[in-house]
Amino acid sequence: MIRRKFMMKTIKDCYKGSVAKSIADFEKWVVDNADLNAVVKTMVSYKHDVSKNVEQPLAGVPFSIKDNFATKDEVTAAGCNLLKNFIPNYSAHVFEKLISFGAIPVAKTTLDELAMGGTGMHSNTGVVKNPLDKSRISGGSSGGSAAMVGGGGVPFSIGSDTGDSIRRPASYCGVVGFKPSWSAVSRWGLFDFSPSFDTVGWFTNSIEDSANLFNLLKGHDERDYTSYSGEIKNVSLKTSNSKHTIGVIEEVYDSIQNPQIKESFDNVLEKLQKKHNVVKVSIKKELLEAMLPCYMIIVFAEATSCNSNLDGINFGTRIDGNNYIDTMIKTRTKNFGELVKKRFVIGSYSLKRQNQEKLYLKAKKIRTLLIKAIENVFKKCDGFVFPAAAEVAPKIEDMNNKKVQLADMKDILSDALLLANFAGLPSITIPMTQIKKMPVGISVNSDVFQEDKCFNIAKEIEKVI
Ligand code: GLN
Image 1 (cartoon, rainbow, N blue to C red):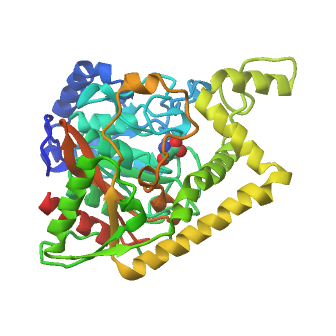
Image 2: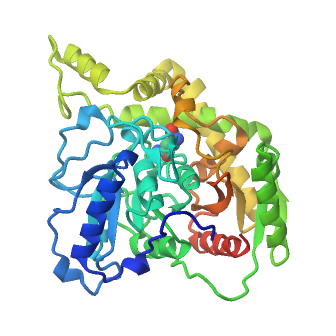
């Protein structure tokens, strides 16, 4: 694994450690790293009974969680001014489960408002900086979680991934970022962004930790009817000489522009070829180019609908107006950021009765075509790979000079992480190389509920890096 300048804290390092020491270490970390802006709120005084879980698999292991997961009696604002006083009376499923496994919550992490965005620059509490170079972005939307793991604050952090929100920041911050198959982990208590794309996932400093968390967190939860009720295979990382067929999507490969990223990716493929089968696969360029517009139509429409309760009446910091409509307009105009408002306008437009056929339903048909194309890819390989980012983390200054975009992805390679959300695939980013000391990851994707293959291919790649 590529070494970074920070200590790579793993779950094993912290397991059954002293809770008091973990908390003291974390408190020091927060002070020393305040300028990262990764933490919205520390949770070190969160009430839970540690003594009950001392023999559990995550006993004493500190973790943080993105602030769009509900935490009982603790403000959960999701990076949004409208929710800045919202205190849920329930906790998210994953949060409860981690505590029952003995893990110690230490912080809620900064995110792009309502999980929309890919830079870490769109939170109501400011920009999240990259722990490896503070003049650069962390990526987003789960930027705070990525920065905390990358900066040595915690061995793991929970995030959410609707398009790439775990796996691109993982590339920028040099950590392991994983999203499971859609529905493999309960979304109960995760604020909906786009339910047909949303997944709970996590950042770690090792593939092993990520796989262990999957084995612990997967499974049906009756409070989330969309969580899968069948058996989901455990991941077991094999030490034996298992051989895989690894696909490279030609059209994605052809869109790699950075020569150093290309060289490093070629190098990985060449080494893999010695033991495994590396094969070319294909998805029509037109379909790949249609992916981002379709993502924007479906996801913004779902987001508009799911967030329509944020009106200052049912929820949120109200700004009073002359009547219901006026109150709602004032509340939403003042309390949402520019990016979120832009997305709600597009979402409302494609949901209008007269536009549904030509926009929303058409985008869903293209989604089906993409899913079929991906099914065909899996007839030829166990998993496909590509660089997880087109570049290293951009400079904050350069991003500041740009107007707020509707979405930050724009070329086939940058959009390729979306494939996993379109088709509900498990997908992992692990560090691949460094360019001028900044990391770039590689993305491994396998078929739905084939997490075992995804992790084992990632492990094989790690061996040759
Ligand atoms: N960057 C993507 C977007 O802005 C994905 C966000 C996410 O995965 N939450 O929509």
